[in-house]
Length: 144
Image 1 (cartoon, rainbow, N blue to C red):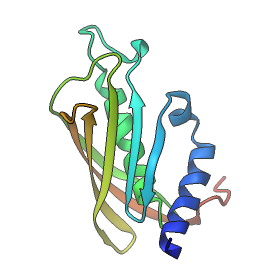
Image 2: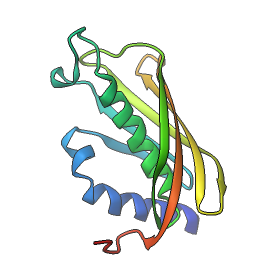
Image 3: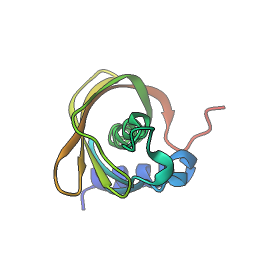
Image 4: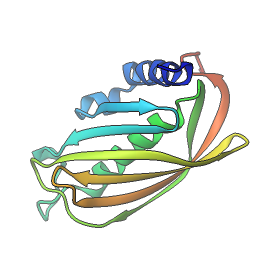
């Protein structure tokens, strides 16, 4: 394993340990490497809306989580600067969703990442694009 991969995994472990939101929703981080992350979440009954499909906010949250873990693989605290999502197909209670985030480019302290959210059958549920901004604090350092 390369030093860059080891750093990415250490960053992910530190972030996940402090990420109450993701852990409380059952989101797991399946893979992480520099500029890339895969997150997984099962749609529960409390995540569906009045149409009995997954509320878009939960789909966005899963995509945003994968994005966050992908852009925080370089040892510096990195936050979202902007994000947008296109909902392609519904997800339903019981569906296992997988979000794969991939870095498209980094420039200065900024980056662009694409995230595809799929159901277990491979059907694309959403496409997300996030823009990141790197802060000066190393991951794990107090920012308060």
